Image (cartoon, rainbow, N blue to C red; front, side, top):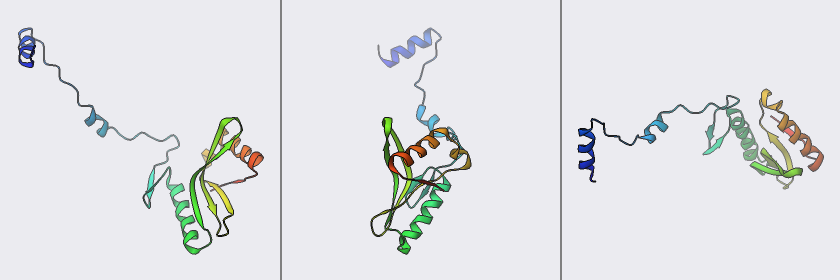
Amino acid sequence: MTEEEFAEFQRRHKQRIIQKPDYTARVEQEAPKRQKYGNRRVEVDGIWFDSQHEANFYQTLMIRVRAGELKTVCRQVKFDLPGGIVYVADFVTIRPDMTVEGVYDAKSPITKKNRTYINKKKQMKACWGIEIQEV
């Protein structure tokens, strides 16, 4: 049956022609999903950050790199913990002598109280001897 014959059939039987909905237009018009803690993703120097607070701290660290206090800043560094758990630090800073200066995590007062984060922080101290610095 051709499209014309099908349209004629529907017209004779008083049925309207069913067209495919345009899903792409709807997706573009939907409002962005609200984040759990109200943070907004931000782009700085071509890098996307999960919050404005994290982006501001990155800029502070990059000033220290340009001043020569730090060799480099590593982002989203993964640490393996017992039980197959992985902790992802926001920043790890390296001194010019290639030693670790600090492990930093950008936290708001609400996310500091998160039980999962507290447990991972304790495991990092017990297993690796690393104190996470909350900024």
